[in-house]
Length: 543
Image (cartoon, rainbow, N blue to C red; front, side, top):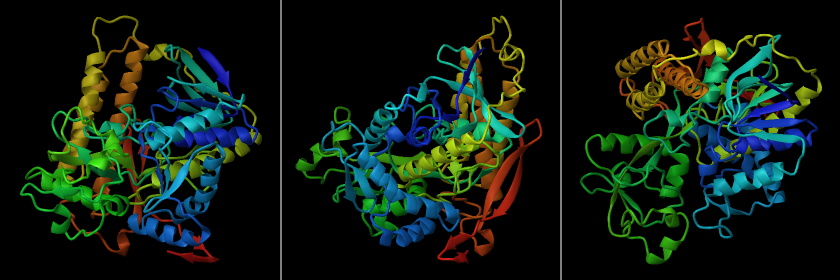
């Protein structure tokens, strides 16, 4: 086994992980960033359009907070929302100092200016490239790509590193004084999603197995406008939208007018993406929902984002095309405090892997903003924590790990079985934990998850690459179980969770969050309803 050591270890190289690494090393910590994909390129950040919902000036902060809480249906952790609002402007200045060109773009706030870049370079990709360039200036940052984390290690109830496999599938232990989870969400476990294919909820599974609680896992956000026309790629349709674009139901009616949504698509996608996702999914169950770009003037087709359209496959200028929601973002995740600390000393978390910032629904543009603000806070907090610690090596690494998990030889190949399992999870997630749910179907989904968990026990693994795939399948099943368990516990429809059997939003008694954690060796969940932390503002507490 290979042994490495660092002060701060960051799992994930998306926007949150990269921002954390820069803040950590600037605060004097030796920092190591590990990711199971190529550095920065396996994250959802690189697929983002580049919009940041950040207040432009101090006087906008209170309005921003109120709007974020309103869109989150009052289930946000008010302390985290306040940190996001107050830290946003500082992160805009940081981006400017590292050479990111930003423009003010209502209704988001800011947008990465793409005019000096190729048309097909998304704003998120520009951000990632700029942060990587900045991080590479520091000799005290080490990057390990294609590294798979098998487990977070602890000693004396503190996080002290990880064990996993490097790019050559050699076992490796990394000892650290602090660990930051920045692994992103789990949209890749769904059949229809706009996430990177390897975003499978690894961070949620790692956290659960450490005994940490997850909150708000029922609130999976769906992006309403995804290509569903046969032959077109499964991707989201990026804003901003030309004012000439229309959404039509199967009978050719204007869908927005039909439901009284008299606002621009750009405003809709920021403030009401939960509602329009639900309506489009509901309408698509009885007929096609179509998007119409045929009225867009010719001069606009060379501008972003129309320049991204795969014109060679479809004549968007003359034909309507089918759309359907796509799994986009996980509002829930690891519970943190405003300093990005989890309940385990030495373990911090930032970005989509965390819960509490967005409540029941995320305001458009708050994802990249969250990654920057809390990535910086996690990097600073972890580096400060590391200064007070001495290196501790975990004593729980099995002597024969990972050989104890492998059999020496078998004629039975498991690769295809595991890949079949991963495809099955995507089907189960879309069928039972999709845009509309009910208790009967969700319990059927849980039963199917348990069937696959039992099957996994009989898989005979002889190669590390199959052990990694098996671990991803185990984690995907655990994440889906978390979503379904949390969804069943919330007996109402709120934000991104829409239930057929409880179609109305509940009253004040429902303003509690669903918290789950693992109890027992069989990884069953204990469910708790928790009070939401009070919001401290101007010297007074407000619910």
